[in-house]
Amino acid sequence: MTDLPSETDKKLGLLIDLDICVGCHGCVTSCKEWNSTDDNLPLSDFDSYGEAPDGIFLNRVHGYETYDGILSQTVHFPRSCLHCEQPECVTVCPTGASYKRQEDGIVLVNPETCIGCKLCSWACPYGAREYDHRQGIMKKCTLCVDRIYNEELEEEDRKPACVLACPTSARLFGDFSDPQSDVSILSEKRGGVALMDNLGYKPVNRYLPPRKKHITSEQNSKNNANLQRFSDLKPNNANSKLEEFFSWLDQKLS
Amino acid sequence: MSPAYSIIFFTVFSGAGYGLLAIVGLTSLTSLLPDSTLLNLIMLILSLLLISVGLLFSTTHLGHPERAWRAMSQWQTSWLSREGLFALITYVPALLLCVIWTAMVIQTFLPQSINELENYVALIGGVCGLCAISTVFCTGQIYASLKTIPAWNYFLTTPIFLLLSIVSGLLLWISFNSVFTYQVNNFVVLFSVFMLEVAFLLKWVYWNFVDQVKFSVTKAEAIGLEKKTKVQNLEPAHQTQNYLMREMGYNVARKHALKLRWFASWAAFIIPGICLLVGVIDSSYMPITSFIALLCLIAGLITERWLFFAEAKHVITLYY
Image 1 (tube, chains in turn green, brown):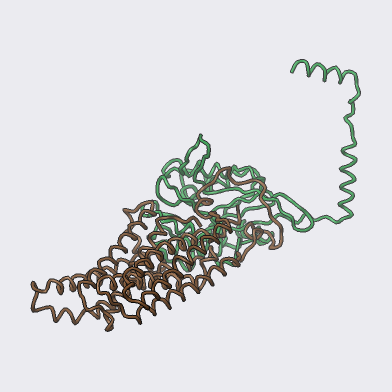
Image 2 (image 1 turned 180 degrees about the horizontal axis):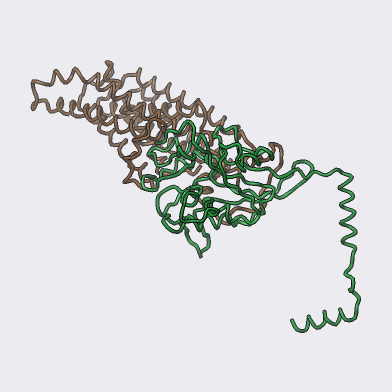
């Protein structure tokens, strides 16, 4: 049913640290791999080796350059379903194929009853849903519901594939309804952001904004001076005859 | 938003069908109902044909049309489901009216019961009209309720859908009446011109709104940064277009859109208005002018509907 539970028992979600995400796309590929194998319907690919390859992904990583008036920096931004508390993708669904689970708050699509009307993807402000036109149904992040409760896996592996894959631990998985959980504590400490909160979807996932790296103008000029000194430095044995010989030999042999 | 032809044709044709059904149904409550039951029956069947063809178009938009019946189930929360349900319910009084009028046309077969049936025409016609209007109202609400598309999430979206549907119905009704009976009530024609120009006015207000509407969030807020941070694209998430960009990232050039707005204004609102007024002045022209008005209106509405989608920007374009 598309009626939303008034309160879910748990609020499982992801805490994504924009300060340490390096934009490696490891989460993207591991997500695609896990969600295309085993009992899952594959996330279709189209024109894989052609001019314009295309495919369904449940997670995408964008790279942005940001400038806050003082410092410009690169921000890598992973984008996937935020498992909102007020998910309009669910309430607009005419068939009840989209639903929010009472027990853990995960938003899912039933592939057996989805008619592929695409309205849910229109209702989602985060671009979390992608339509698989080969299978004629909508696809979205399941928070790896087939991993996190899977007793065949070791306990430490019962986490979403993207979380396990992240080499910098920029992604944490946990229960946001429990104030003592790692995700709640860290989100509280670092000012976790609910994306586009004013639209009223109440996303569960939180993003940790990049830490403030602001420097004073005095520090800035000192840094610039250091950089200048660094570029003036020459390698120690730049002029050694032996070094020149090896350089000549290297060129001849390569 | 990508202008999908399945939805454009569905909303224009079914919209006209529901409009005509509403007029046919509601006139049965009044003295405006044409005397010829055959004419009423023909218009009723035509409206059902338009509705059905439009609904068939809409199912081609689906990935699994064979599961379309499931779409009736979530009427508590989903406007799309409500639309589907009303579309289906509308067939009940419409087909009942069809049966009654058919019986009245071929009255030789059912001589006794005719008078009894006739008493129910007004009641069933009224229900029919209300169902038809409710269906179009739901169609408008599907778009108007999406907070992700500020151009649609506007108080005029649904009224415009309703007005354009009613106006299409009125023009169909006038065309058929003038062709079959050579006489149309001038009051109805002038009322139609009035409705047409009100729709025109609201559409201009809507277009003016679309030109000015902005997202309530910035690109920076979309990625969790402070509102005023400048954000520009550095590394794309993917090299080629994906579903989101094709479906939600459709972009129509401003110059191009303005030309189409002028075309839609003339074709849907100005020319039909002039044609109908010519028909009022000299009613012998009405069969021709009302037919021209109808053709222009349909061409104009298809353009108007294309723009409705093409000009609407979805908030996820902030990420791209």
